Length: 154
Length: 84
Image (tube, rainbow over all chains, first blue to last red):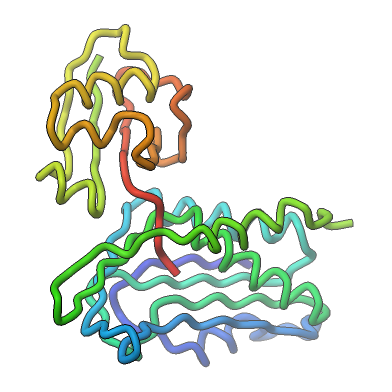
């Protein structure tokens, strides 16, 4: 089961996580990640997320597909918000269900690393100095690239 | 050949437009050739020339400069992505 959503509304991480294993008894591990808008320390007052409607959903579905090819997964769920968000608000949810924790942890991290470098979202931060577009970070490319070396699923 | 070209994020703001429809000669048959055509408009459009870290997509799939383009395609140019 794969679910991919792009929405402006907030999400209920608990409900999304319960849905991953609802009605099943073959799942032994669920790993989740929730990304939040980091504000105070960086002086960010508001963040606006722009995306490329159509391509975004396709790119997220492809990333979920690739995770399912690399690991034996029972469910993958990705929710990404767009529009104006305030510090502390949730931006992104990734949930992965598998038989064992190793696959769940790895696949969850993989989906986030690929999302950061392949899904067409752009962040604009608003600070007291005005608005500016967030620069892509080399460390995100490096995080995604390390999966190139990881052995594919047996 | 008719193309729809989309611009996103900082590039959209820099160029002052989000989308346009272009009628181009068939010789403009790759992303690289389209970049050359658009950057020749001068000023801010120079950002589409090589070396400015602007990415491209053809029909909503990431594409290199060598990617072929044709009539009816949806092309997009945008800065490196920063979601998550």
